[in-house]
Image 1: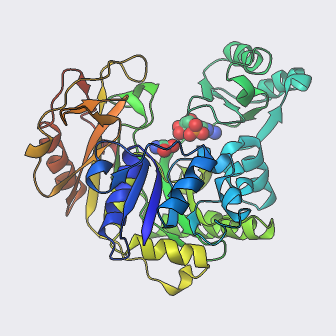
Image 2 (image 1 turned 180 degrees about the vertical axis):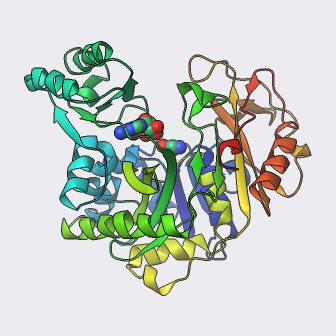
Image 3 (image 1 turned 180 degrees about the horizontal axis):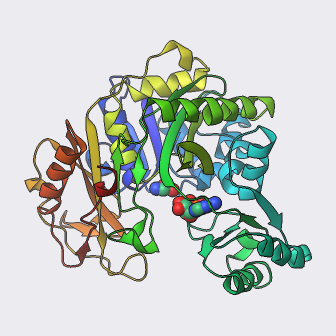
Length: 426
Ligand code: AMP
Ligand code: GLY
C-alpha cells in the first residue's frame, strides 16, 4: 500500500526507515521529510498542519495509511478531521484524536487524568491570572527547587525549574500576567519536584490492547555532564540498564495499564503512540509527562530495535487487534548520538555543507534531522539538530564505541556533539 508519513525530523527518518523495510509498503511519501528521508521514499512539500493539503494528496496518490510523527497535527485534530470526512474516514491514521492529544496539549488536563485514574505523578495545582496570589501561597508550601509548567505547547521550553522562591514568584507572574509563553502560559501547573533518573517509555495502543516498545534514555542538556540549556535531545540509548524487569513491571501495572484503561473509560479514541516521560524515584516510577507521539531522538534508538513489520503493527493498531500480533525486538543495545549546529539551542548557522556521510560504516545508521539538499545534491545543515548516528552492540559500551567512531566521519564547519552519551547508565 501507499503510505504517507507526516513530519521531517530524525524521528521521522527512523520511522521511515522501518516503514520502508516492510513488504506491505509500495510507495512511501514523507511530508515534508528531509535529505535523509528522500532516500527512502518521496518527500512532498506539504504542511502537515494544513489538513486540506493532506487530504488532497492522500486522495490523489491512493494513500492507504497515514502515520503522524509530530504532535502539532494531532493537537490540531487531524485524526478527527479524517474520521469526519466521507472520503478519508476509512483510511487508517496512526495518532490519537484531538481529545487524546490533550494529554500532551494541556499539562493541566494530563495531571487531572493521572489523578483521576490513580497514576503516580508529582503533587500539583493549576493557576490562572485570576488566582495568582493562591499560586504564590502554594509555592510557599513547597520546597526548592520549584517546578513551573506552562499548560500548553511551548516548543519544549515551557517548563521552568527554579532554585529560589523569589525567582519562582517572578516567573509565575511573567507566565500568567505577561504571557511569557503566549497563550500556552495562561494556565500554569506548579508541581512538586521529583528527584531521580528519567526514562522514556513508549507504548503503541489500539485503545484497548497495547505493546510496550523498547524503552530509552534521552540526554536533554546541551553540555556534557547534563549541564547548560535544554535541547530537543542530544542522544539516546536503548535499552536502559536500570529499567529491569522489576522496574518495568511496576511501569506496566501502575502506569501503562491504568493509562490505556483510563483512555477507554473516558471514551477517548486513541490509536497511536503514548510516550511516557517518567522519573525513577528510588525504584518507583512517577509520570513527569505524557506525549502523544514518539520521542526524538529516542525513536532513533528505539525503532531500529523493532524487528516486527511496523506497517503490520500500525494496521493492527487501527483495526483494534494489537493483541493478535507479536512485537519482536532486537535484544542488542542501540546508541544514538546527535550532532548539532554550534550555537544550538540558541542561534546557529544554517547551510553548511556536510561531508563524509558516505564514509560511515555499513552497519551504522545515519538519521537526518535538520538537513536539506541543494541544487547540486550537496547535503546542507538546515536546523539545530542536524544528523545522528545509531549503532548496535552486544553491550551498550560496544554500541557507543561504534557510534562515536562514525560520528567522527561526518564533518561540517560548525559541528558540535556530546561525548558522554550513555556514560551515566553504564
Ligand atoms: P517537560 O517539558 O515536561 O519534558 O519537562 C522538561 C524537563 O523538566 C523534564 O524532562 C524533567 O527533566 C524536568 N521536570 C519536569 N517536571 C519535573 C518534576 N516534577 N520534578 C523534577 N523534574 C521535572
Ligand atoms: N526527546 C524528548 C521529546 O521528544 O520530547
